[in-house]
Amino acid sequence: MKRLVFLMFGLLACTFSWSQIKVVYHLVDGIPQASRAIGNIRNHLAADPTTKIVVVAHGAGIDFLLDGANNANDQSFSSSVSDLVAKGVDFRVCNNTLTARNISPDKVLMEAKVVPAGVAEVARLQAREGYVYLRP
Image (cartoon, rainbow, N blue to C red; front, side, top):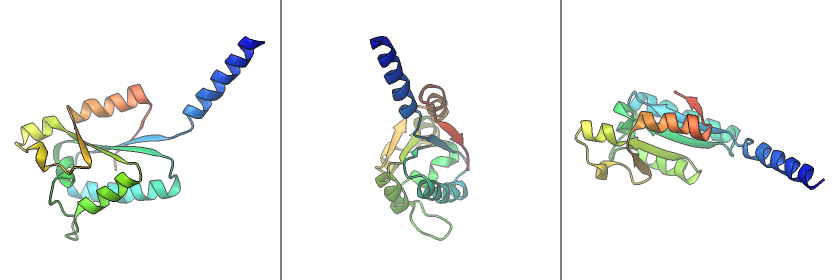
């Protein structure tokens, strides 16, 4: 009987751990893609505030996470990023891109974390942590 109870508890725990949706937004195409992604993420969280979202950027996708970056309406991305971080969104920037483009990590918004490789981070999140992949 005890084994049955432990088995049922284990299955129940697995059910709850899979109930939260986890999504990685992959950004590689610069400011226009970042603007779309910000809107998508806001809509996503409005529909399901419990979703865990990680944004991984590399290549031109990092541009919106650099100090002084503005959207097409000349509005700073910094406030949008801060607002989303306050809602639990994580932002990650590829160090390989920073190195290749000779950009100091100090130029990255303080809300974003620098990771060794953007593509490796996307793969890790999908394979090891069960994230769903989206590319706006």
